[in-house]
Length: 193
Image (cartoon, rainbow, N blue to C red; front, side, top):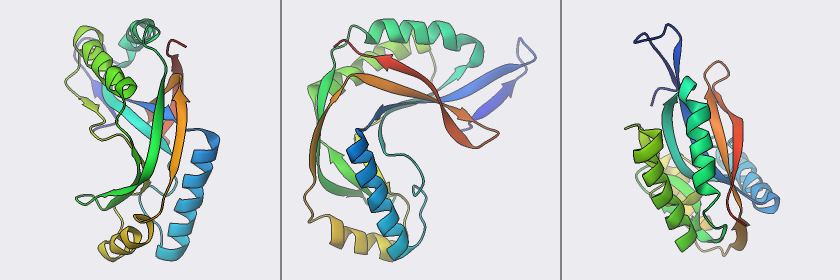
């Protein structure tokens, strides 16, 4: 997905932004994932997700810069009626196709309601075809590692137990910064508490 594109349609400087909506993790979970990433990097070498901050992706979409204020006002208004919810992290798992190790996020009614609400917002307010939901909510640890490293990570981490439960009361919105090639904080969206 292109991160930012110039569109010469109606205005000379119509910017398209790449937006990432996520659930930020409690500090203790973020620190644990950072420690795991450092351990894996030391033992097996660098990997794609080494420096990314631990999170759970909700969705990712493109939106014109000039539409962001009214669209996000509508998103805030709608999500402020959605109850906060509990998420449970439970054990390690993998995605074979991308050779990724991650922490499982148990299915929850609250997360599913969030996805349903964003799908309604996509149709009614966001109105973009470049919109992706998280199909399997998870916390990425190591992504796109070499095959031999992937086999070792599975052997080492899949048998380990990890459980953590936390309350989700807000979402974090990031906007891709093309110049610095990273996501920057754009805003927080509070759920109903």
